[in-house]
Structures are given as structure tokens and as C-alpha cells.
Image 1 (cartoon, rainbow, N blue to C red):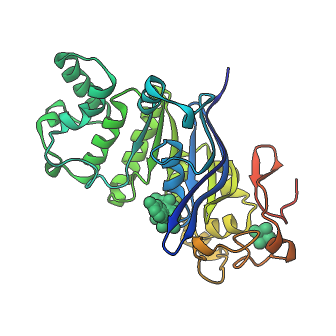
Image 2: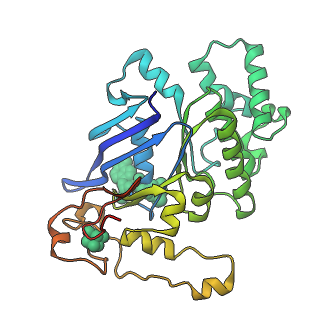
Amino acid sequence: MNDRLIEVKDLCKFFKVGKGNTLKAVDHVNLYINKGETLGLVGESGCGKTTCGRTILRLYDATSGQVLFDGKDVSKMRGKELLEFKKRAQIIFQDPYSSLDPRMTIGEIIAEGMDVHTNYTAKEKDAKIAELLNSVGMKEDFANRFAHELSGGQRQRIGIARALAVNPDFIVCDEPISALDVSIQAQVVNLLIKLQRERGLTYLFISHDLSMVRHISDRVGVMYLGSLVELTKSKEIFENPRHPYTKVLMSAIPVADPEIDGEKKRIEIKGEVPSPIHAPSGCKFRTRCPYATEVCAQEIPKLREVKEGHFVACHHCNEE
Ligand SMILES: Nc1ncnc2c1ncn2[C@@H]1O[C@H](COP(=O)(O)OP(=O)(O)OP(=O)(O)O)[C@@H](O)[C@H]1O
Ligand code: SF4
Ligand SMILES: [Mg+2]
């Protein structure tokens, strides 16, 4: 049995931008996601997380490389096979305010995917909508309401119910909590965890919030300027980060205990993130990396396994 639901091989998504320039939003990314697992994806704004998620879902066509879903190349899918993939692989968007159509009732929003992918009768559909509302912690009578009557947290629950309506296996959760009040972020994440357990779902969880990523993810990937620089188990990446950039990211997480937080050493890095249109040669992090040497400017570091299941793209990270 293949445990891998998603396999991403040398995936690239480049955008043509003004003056004939190319923006490498996703640049030779390699990763896999096992069935039933949550892979967290982190990195600064603009590093390519959303583009990566969308290219995996074939919402964008890849420039090159492959996405395998259950062993099958997504870019080669056509007709029925593609429709089946679109059903099995869903997305939850960041902004629950703009992602729900204000003219449709909540019931109609949830049922939209069902209309494309199932042959439910009207009665079956109503029963399914009620069941979905319950499973995201809402009462059935919300089906007749409109999005503007709902709070942000409730809207995001509807976004989740909509994704679940077609019984997917895989969901890209693209910053699903960042537009919500801090007080309800944990509730929504805990709901995602509960639904994953109940339904055996596989998640790609994209977020800026490293503490939340740690809470939900089995493994975590770190992106910098379109490249994946480190990938390993969640506990390992937070406790034993190896890539210089990951170390910087992790050192910035506030610790709940102010005494420990005061003692914790924040690692500062120099300079701004370079433009993704004119990324540095070799290692893209070299212009900000305190350990950079000549080889870093000349050769692109490949993602290597430095310890079982721990992958790092850095010339100067030794194997353990
Ligand atoms: N359709 C597009 N056309 C041109 N450039 C794009 C397009 N979509 C994204 N980009 C660029 O690709 C890069 C990656 O963007 P992306 O939205 O994937 O980053 P992100 O990591 O999701 O950022 P954020 O954390 O802000 O959501 C950015 O430089 C962005 O400006
Ligand atoms: S490859 Fe070189 S520049 Fe890049 S992170 Fe490693 S040491 Fe720093
Ligand atoms: Mg994004």
C-alpha cells in the first residue's frame, strides 16, 4: 500500500511579470504528504506557500515538475479522472469574508460542490447539509441564513463544511485562521483536528502562526523565496532546527513564560528579503546568512536528508 497521498517532485511555478521577467514563486520543491497526516508549511509573506498549495491542487498549472496524487500525475488527468481529483482535493481559504458568496444561502454554498460531484436528491442534500453543519459545530437552521449574518469564526466553519461536502481526502488549509480573532483561532484549529481524526483527512496547513502550526502538524516544511529549505517532524523542527533560516524563524516565537522568553536568544538577520525576480545565485538565503561562504554563491544547495526524515537544503549542515 502506498502511504503517500501527495508526492511533489521538483515542482516549479513561475509567473511571467513585467519587462520580460520571471518570478519563481515555487522553485524545484520536493515533498510528500502521507495519508492522514498534516504537513505544515511556513515562511515569510511572499515565499510561495499559497502558490505551492494551489499548484498541488491544479488551480495553477505547474511550470515544470510533478504532483502525484495517490501515485497518479495530476497534470495528466483528464475528464472523469480530473473531476474525481477535484472532488478528492479541496481548499479552505484564508478570508472567510470574501470567500462566501453574499447572495447565496449557507445551504446553497455548502451544496455547491455536491451539485457538481454527486447525484443526491433534494432531500438527501438537505440531510447532508444538516449533518455537515452539525459536524462543524453549527445548528441546522443556519442553512437558511446568509454569510453576512455570521461571525468570522462561523463563516470559516462554513468554509470547512463546504470543503467537506464532497467527502474529500485532502484539504489545503491556506491560512485558515489568520483573518480570525485570536480568541477563536484555536477553536477552528481544534475543529480541523477533530474532523481529520473522524474522517481520515490529509492536510497541507499553511500558516504564519508557528505555534498553531506546531499544534496541528505532524511534519513541517519551511519555505524561503520559493524554495523549501527544511522539512522534518514538527517536534524536531521546533526543537532542533538545522537550516540557518529556520533557526531565525524559530527564535522569533514568543514563549508563554516571560522569564524564559527573556532568556531566549533571538537571532537577528541582516537585510530585507531579496526580490523573488532577482533572487541571489546559489543559496537564496546567502545575502542574509551569517554562515555563507563562497560555495553558497556558486551552487544551489539540494534538499538532503541529514538525519532520518530530516531534510535540509544548506551546504554547511552536516549529517548527524
Ligand atoms: N498570479 C500571480 N502573478 C504574479 N506573481 C504572483 C502571482 N501569485 C503570486 N505571485 C508572487 O509569487 C510569490 C509567492 O506568492 P504567494 O502568494 O504564493 O506567497 P505566500 O507565501 O502565500 O505569501 P503570504 O504569506 O503573504 O500569503 C510572491 O512574490 C507573489 O507576489
Ligand atoms: S547554503 Fe550557505 S548561505 Fe545557504 S543557508 Fe547554508 S550556509 Fe547559509
Ligand atoms: Mg499565501
